[in-house]
Length: 396
Length: 116
Image (cartoon, rainbow over all chains, first blue to last red; front, side, top):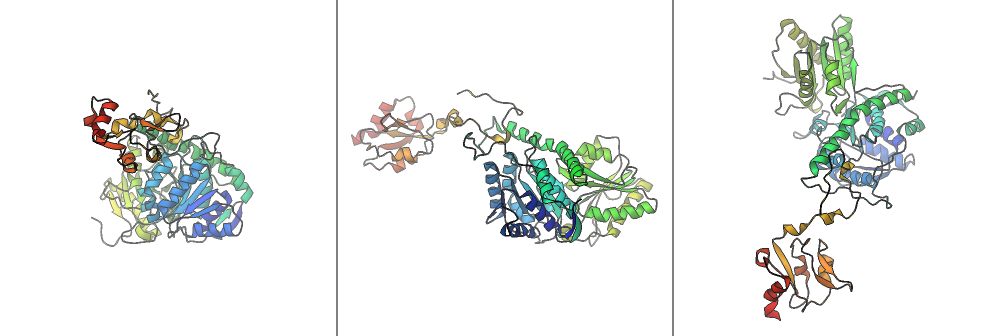
């Protein structure tokens, strides 16, 4: 059992980083993740960590420095949000292509424009195909637990792929919650020592990192990279179980909340799942078979397992905290619908965009989603495949 | 040089190269549109061309002296010609098309005849 503490999601991430004590952190401040490197800098100044903190002039440089340090053979971490994450774009692909197991805390935030510093998933969803493992946290406890697990997942020899752990800007990052902080030594033992595969600083075995691959090599390297990312699925499950054995909190690929016999199901990721669980509890008390499928691992997307978990549903609503940007729906919606296509279920699947730029999503809004699902089952008709939650004006 | 083309599950992780020096297998001389021609008669052996050549395409003999250009790798960038300090210059660029079918000696005579 850990020690119960009342701290923010950012502090949860910072404490995880302190206990992981990576060799190098290169970071640039951006709201709402700034308190993470700020707290880390304090830990280093206080002698609680011996990490080399590289202060850089941009997030592009932050990820570049992380890549260099990781290629050298170090255990490397960083943190960012929104436009900072977007500025890393080019380097995110390079980190995953070079198979460097960098672990990054992302405090998910809206992208400009209009300028907005509040929470949504525009950043991480935009970067979903950069080849990184993506774990999404519901609360501070998960932000802490996931970061520790991410190190072990990313550094697994069959994976060797960078991983990001997302938490929701402000909803989680700046909210004080009670969560369990584990013992420093136990965390160190859990993650173990990092043994890089091909450290550049090993002069006994000189190697080249970041070489070019002409058309007769590139394709093979990219598919080799994809296999590493896909291997992460089994490792996420394995590490989730090991984490449970060590600390008492078990993690899987996703969380099924009252899902076994659920007829009306919401699929969502992040802090909105807390609100949704409350609504599900209330509906269950009134005999309504409501349930929640909470996404934990978004990349690689565990489509078979998620589709299997949705087989009891009579109607499904997928909540995306990002604009569909011209697609049939949000990224989570299209993935879930696609996953269901190969199964027996022909339950209607609808999509909502919610919470953009920090827009509040309250129990009454989640209730309205379940109301709509009930109506769809009763009438057999889907009036709107796509809609918005808590948007002024009727979306049409 | 023949290279074994590995399958996707055989390549080294992350495109890491364990065997150094394999850029030799890549004959960049085929990129050339122009080529430098060298005149040993006016060359002062300053070795500036060797220092500046980005492709290590300046040949050096056993005495450490400039011994010509390695056209297997020379991309024809012209940096050696820019750097050559001798008067007149001992390196000159010509179009690759003009070099077709001619020996190095023939080209040398043709390019530097007025300066001999």
